[in-house]
Image 1 (spheres, rainbow, N blue to C red):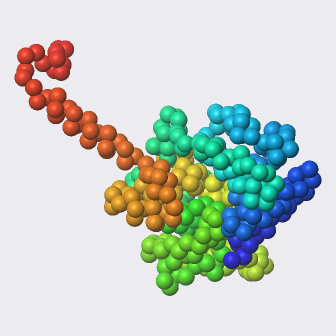
Image 2: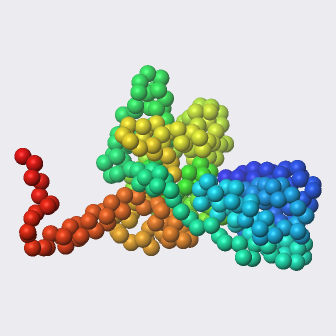
Image 3: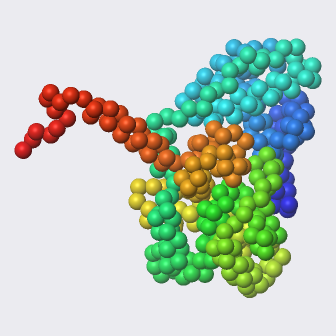
Length: 345
């Protein structure tokens, strides 16, 4: 797919430039090639290389003198960062150490006994996450906002011009749960509207097929007609991107975020991003099925623990159920003095 090839080319160039910037680390090129052969995504390879270089610079030792203590001292510097960030650093350095051992550059894997950071969430993260989705009624508000527009004047005119695009974009995120980067990279050829499917190349170069509901398909058909007219007027009929900007080229990641933010701006107390529409998808599926394995498959997660982090609000029902059970037990007692009765008059 041309869209994925563009992404690969971008990160290949970034990684190559990075390696050339550090001639003192001649083994980086071999490390990168080992990640490629293991079919890591080009994006992952780039960020792994960034972390490895940072580690080497901070440790400032010949590679054959690096120890587990060096890694532990290094990683502790980032203890205030999120556990996800720490896990990525660990993964990058762990793969690097194993590469050095496999290529006889070191005689001992200094990461052999390194502990993988545990995934944890801070209190504020949990509170923020629990608000990070749309309820069914809020979904209707967003759809109405797109239909009617928000604000006025030139803003309304522009929204009218791109209403079908914005509706198709939001509905695809909501009804397929696809990642934002996958949506940005979609080409028209990735659609098969007769079968109601869209094929995307996702993280780690995995190809996923999403089935779309009739409502999304209908809006997409309308957008394709509008898109063709816009591109013809601009003399850009060769553009392959499914979603285009007002400049008539592929929509940017930032523009997708702005579109979602604009139409969700009337939802009180929530700051909705494209990624939170994916969380909404997972939450709605689980609330209707209570089948976590089904949701995992639809969201294309390798680990069910990842899926559980996408399900919002369900814990409130469980907590209330637990509270009711214990409340019933407490009420089942001999009444001597009812301390639980409000005596204020």
